[in-house]
Each structure stands twice: as C-alpha cells, then as structure tokens.
Length: 99
Image 1 (cartoon, rainbow, N blue to C red):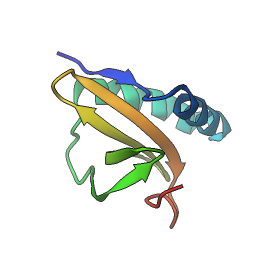
Image 2 (cartoon, helix red, strand yellow):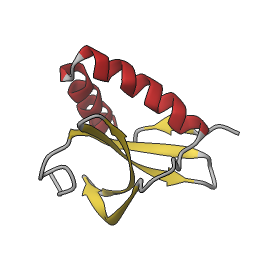
Image 3 (cartoon, one colour):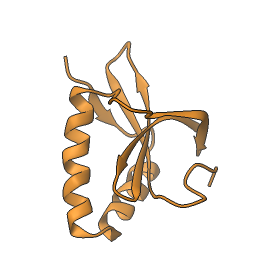
Image 4 (tube, helix red, strand yellow):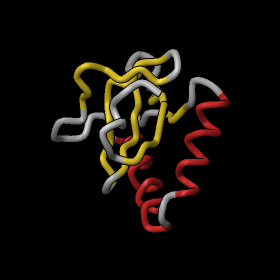
C-alpha cells in the first residue's frame, strides 16, 4: 500500500510550495519524482533519518530526502500510511536548525 502525502497545516503547504517555485526548474521536476518515490518507499536506503529530529513549526521532522542541494524534511505516520511534509530547504548550515 502506498503512503499519502499531507501537510499538517495550510501555512506549511504554502511555504513548501513557495520554496519549490523559487528552485531551478530541474529541481522542481526532481522534487515531483522524489515525492512519488516517497509514496512508494518512505524509508529510502542510506541515512534519511535525522538525528536529532528537526523542529519545524510545532512538528518534528525525523526523515529527509536529498534532492541535489535541497532537502525535503518529513515525518511518517505508519499506522495511517501518511507522510507529513514539513519543509523544503536548500542545503546549508541552517537546514537542520529550527526556523
């Protein structure tokens, strides 16, 4: 069974969409592919788990998906098969800090 993609709040969705719209076109295409891949396999190989988890608004991002120099930060609800999308950030020293 595939997972569903959701945002915990409408404001996080707006921020996510705005960040993606400012990314280069090829990154936007890769984000779309990555989100489809996450739906099928929310725990990709490698080290997608964030230690310690990153606080995004009132939520904790425990996983990440790498897309070039960008990261999708998300959390999983295995019981309900939901991927909670929390942030899309450019990779820099502030990526894993609370904003």
